Length: 511
Ligand code: MSP
Image (tube, rainbow, N blue to C red; front, side, top):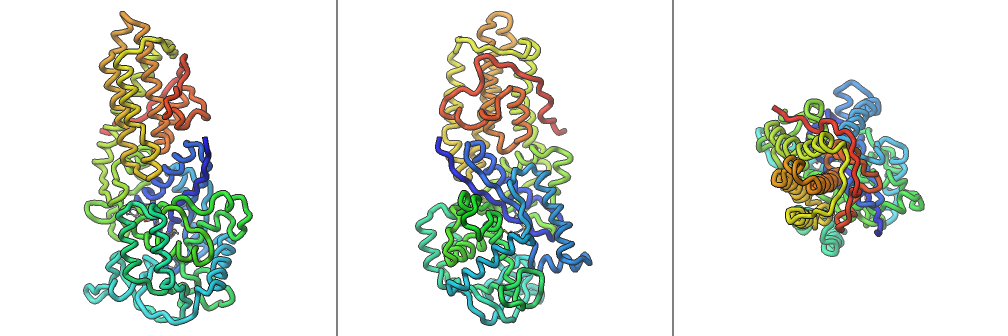
């Protein structure tokens, strides 16, 4: 099988406050794609980290009475810890205050200067510190004497200062041409259209340096200017691969990035500015930017400033990380915004994990333990219902790789959990507990079939619920080397004689 190299990234977090559910969601989504690609026998590099420069962080540090770097050391550690709590499989955690990053940003800046894409002028316009974004006058409204961005709703302030500019306007047609030639560069399609319309409406040159604060990377040969935090931050995707050393194995293997998973609020930066910077610097843009929606609480974006936060760490402590991962991946519609609530989380865990997949594993394992001394031997008693279950499973799993590779995770999970539901139904219909008395051969076959189904489902659910699924696969004594998707071609996962080990409790039902 041909192996591919996949470079998958999450947005690097602003360490300006405590982690919230939006962070958890964005990162878990990227982690699921990374784990899936790894299980699919590809070489994967998965990156996350912290975005530590800019006025927003400087202000947060000041508020806490700390030097910005000391403040960042502290909060970055909280986010690094979050990656462990979320069970992310990241290969690296980059901080934009690291030397390797400084080197990459300096080099990219020089490339943009050398290509003639940067010039010095004066910026006069609106700026939002919380978005770290510039807005034009037609993107600003006034409410009660204060000005806000119509794009994000964040407060904006008027800025007038000397600034270096990136000639974004010169890239308008080249960007449109790039989107045209790379149809799945921006997914989902609705976001692609949104970006194309914005670019078509005209791009202005972009201010890429500031002089009114100090916390950031200095413009090479000009100490007065700090590089715009988004140009700085986006470059993390290159610095982690040891750019500008383009002979480095990491860079050679993994650039251009395969997939940047990001929230829709930062789509403009990733889908417009980032490819423009890269094209101008003579570098290849990423293959895909997937812009997921927002996690909502009621109808509102979940955010600290709105005070409507479901704390991911509390949920993990109380219900478990697989449970949170499953709920967010299954129930939030990834292309659009999704509302979450504690009652839906409980319902989802109970119905899909405790009563469906968990129950399937538990009932088969305890039956095999209590009646077959933990050992099942396959027989030739294949019945019509066995064939039917295999066919139904094949139909449901046929397009799963395609679904995942197009980030259609909702469809993917729905199909897999359906396989689990059908397997439970098969066991109810076949009644192995009755076969024990009059048809042991058939009983063994039903059990073998059920264990095979459990193995398939566990491998398919592995990217989403890595802990529980690995527990099951280990209890089935399935070797790590076998935990991939080769079985989708029709091959068997478990041996003819299966010896199982003790399976502890997988999911507790939430009352
Ligand atoms: N630092 C920038 C990213 C720079 S990438 C070069 C940033 N950081 S963030 O901490 O504010 O957000 C991290 C991720 O969480 C982003 O993908 C953002 O879209 C996502 N979310 C933050 N709040 C969210 C929701 N309420 N819902 C879903 N995701 C949202 O942006």
